[in-house]
Image 1 (cartoon, one colour):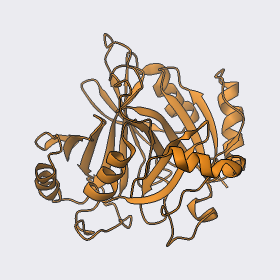
Image 2 (cartoon, helix red, strand yellow; image 1 turned 120 degrees about the horizontal axis):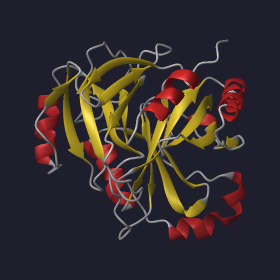
Image 3 (cartoon, helix red, strand yellow; image 1 turned 60 degrees about the horizontal axis):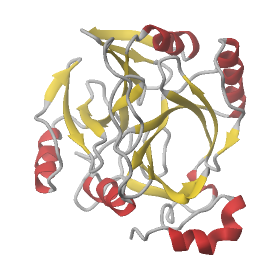
Length: 312
């Protein structure tokens, strides 16, 4: 087996109100709510997972909803600043009308790298894009009563990082992750891997004078890249450590195994395995319906549940 980075695994962001976050992504955006658990480091806070039917790597958007009144994040350098979703060609009209219907802040469609895209903000100010990919995206979408397959999101297209100097981050992508620079438009540099067909793109935007961003409400906490299994995960741990970067030991997140390190530009990166997946503790049909707790918190279930706000 080749030791490859297989594009994006998941992206984790911070939200305020839990129910508002749940309603926006599961109802307005039509993503499947695949896991309701807690922050492993703060069991008083939810950890939500949204994705396709089974929670495929490359479709998983996760949130720590910290509650109302938390500090607002500030976009800037050293951050992941835009999350791009792939949607079918011709679907942006549907999404524009839907955003108008639900009072979602959005721009008019624009174009970059030969692809039409629609920028919008979620209720906490997180910046996202719907992108009509110029390459065919055959991933099976999750459908709802209002959002059918011909317009539904397919999973991630791009993650955009804003940096004062792209070179140290670009070196991580090319020398360690196996990405290649494929396109450039002014100060936006597009890197991609050929190891997978989708969720394969990282855009680096260089803004030398941009102030450092602040990760809080409405901002991306970390970006996770996908590897096949534990053996490949540990291969990359050795490689990153040999590069001179500090990286965590392997951490068991129940649904995948992870390593974390901060790339030179300041963005927190994670490497996450495909195994064991989201059906390890509930059936495919039951995904997202029950509060699933890590084993160490199960004895405290009653007090944890009493603290968490109901969302549905």
